[in-house]
Every structure is written in C-alpha cells, then in structure tokens.
Length: 390
Ligand code: NZQ
Ligand code: ZN
Image 1 (cartoon, protein in one colour):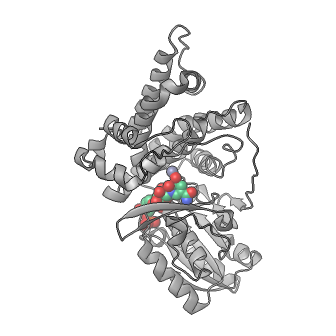
Image 2: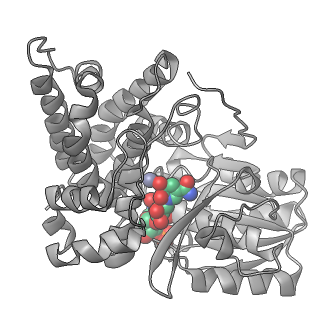
Image 3: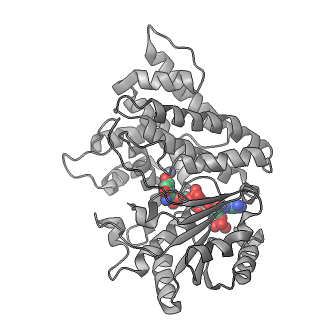
C-alpha cells in the first residue's frame, strides 16, 4: 500500500426530509448570504426549490438564485455566477441538484475569490487554495461530487471539458435524501449507476500491491450496485434501494476506497471527450468506454481481471486459462449495463468513427506523453480503444 493522506471533511446529513434542514446547516457553516444554484428545472417541478427557500427563510438567511446549469456544465454560467456573487456579496453557495450543478457551484466558489480567470484552475496546474464554502442538496446518485474534491466544467470556447481537484472545494455539508431521487427518469438513474461503478473501476485496476482493504471496499460497492440497481429500475420509489445507491455513490468517489493505491482515470478522460463533443451524459459515455478500455488493457494483469470476475460477477475461475474468466467478467458487466438500458457502443451514443482523431488530439497528449497508470496509454493506444468501442 502507498503512503497517503485522506481529508474528507464534508458533514453528511442523510435521510428522509433532510432538505428541510438546509437553513440550519448553512447557518452552522457560516453562510449569511447564499447563492442557490440549480439546473434546468427539475428542482422547481418537484417542489424541492420551494422547500429549500422555506428552510433558508426560517433560518433568517438571505439568498439570490441562479438556475440553468446544463448537464456537462458550461463556463458561461460560471462567469455569470461569479459576477452575481460579487455584486450581491454572497458568502455561501448552495448547490441544489446533481453533479453538474455541484461542479458549477464549486467553480463559482473558487472563482469569486480569485483575481484571474477561474478557467486557470481547469486549464493549468494552478490549484484552488481558497473558495467560498459550498453546501449541496443532492438529487441524483452519480458523479459523487457531493463528497469529492473534483469539479468538471466545459469551456464553450473550444468545448474543452476539463477538471480541477482540491480539498478547498470539497462541500462543507451535503444533504442526501434518497426520496429526492424518486423523480429521476430511468435513463438518468442508469447513467448514475454506470458512473458510480466507473469510479470504483478507476481505482480497482491498479498496480499497487497489498491493498486488500480497498479492494474489498470496491467490491462491496460493486456488489451493492448490482443488487440494488435493478430494484430502482423496477420501482423508482424503492427507498431502501435508492438509499443504498445514494450512499454507494458518495463512498465510490470521496476516495475512501482509493487511498493508498495508484488510480487510472484514462477511461474518464476519454469519456470527457465524448461528452464534450456530443453532449452525451457522462455515465452513458462511460458505459461505452469502460468495456473497451478493459478489453484493451486486461492482459497487463489478467489475474486482477479474473479476480473481479469471480468475486463480483460470480464467474468460475478457469485456472488453466484465466483470460477466459476475465473476459466473462467483462461480458457480465456489458450485459448488466445493457439490462439497465445503457449504451455499449459508439453508434448508440451517436458518436462517429471519423471524429476519433479529433478526440485523441483534444485529449492533448504531447509526443511521447502518456496517461493512465494501470497501463500508460499513448495517442496510438487511445485511438485503438476508441475504435474498440465502435
Ligand atoms: O437540470 P435538471 O433539470 O435538474 O435535470 C437533471 C439533468 O438533466 C436531471 N436530474 C437530476 N436530478 C433529478 C433530475 N431529474 C429529475 N429528478 C431528479 N431528482 O438529471 C440530469 C443529469 O444531471 P447532472 O447533474 O448532469 O448529473 P450527474 O450527477 O451525473 O453529473 C454529471 C456531471 O458530473 C461530472 C460529469 O463529467 C458531468 O459533467 N463529474 C463530476 C465529478 C466530480 N465533480 O467529482 C466526477 C465524475 O466523474 C464526473 O466527471
Ligand atoms: Zn465519473
């Protein structure tokens, strides 16, 4: 196991009706003037936004609001949010929505306290060191941004989708009420499942040895997703299943199961090019990219792929030929994602073969540079993996 530090200071408030405590927690974390940030309208339709405002009113907290965050959130609204916060002397950002709204909130929170262009944090090595506090009220189990140090924004100029990571933008509190996810359309539920599982895979496929505890945590999350996901596809109001998935989504990405081990993340970077170019949902893009990446790299450590096939997918170990077991595990993953209605191929996403060179170029690896850690990938590898996903 590698040396590590782990700092996960978010205060989690989990369960039914907890959104009604938003005012109390904003106050506890020092907010006096709040920006309520939200997406395209689901929080208005469900009545959640009104309940949040009532809670803030009850705590005597003043607020302004900014809606309109799109999935794959854009820089334009971030600039707007930064201006609004400065004008209104906002000292706390409350994200009400999914990963896109939370990521946009984190970008605004960092941008308000920075003299330069917030995009510097996403396009260079510059680290966010200070940001306004962000609280979240989560409405979809997926990106894990409610507990993560990440934020992903797409800049309209060039449609570049880039991320930044810093403990300074981890939410100070996150309210997780599984009931809020009952209204999710089935495809959004499924996209979330794929993203949660992908966050585990990015950590599971590692070259670091003696990481039994995090291996087992990863496997527990995957087994939970396999058991609970069909239940919510069948019955979107299954509270128990929604609750398990919601917490799995947080644990999968606050890095509890990733500490002390090298992580890969090349499938995520390849997916970000798909969602930047075609504006597809991140989870759907991952469902296409991950099996292709797995097939391409599995020979590097066939035993690790056989291990997950046996422990998670219940495959029988073929000791003479572990590759058979490994491939069976990948097939089970594809079948599982398909059973949830997720796409598995480029064509199902509406992605085109002729765009592959453009996506590879946009990832931006220079000559001789690689990405990923399980197997370092060069431009020619990226091209082959995209083609495997056709
Ligand atoms: O905008 P509204 O109207 O709210 O609709 C949203 C949106 O259309 C809808 N939705 C959310 N909750 C709902 C609901 N509809 C009905 N009922 C509800 N309860 O679902 C759609 C998707 O929402 P979005 O916020 O985009 O989903 P998600 O949480 O999957 O976030 C995706 C973004 O997160 C980034 C992705 O790249 C993508 O941009 N990621 C962020 C990470 C992080 N910050 O740590 C890590 C991830 O790997 C990921 O890259
Ligand atoms: Zn993801």
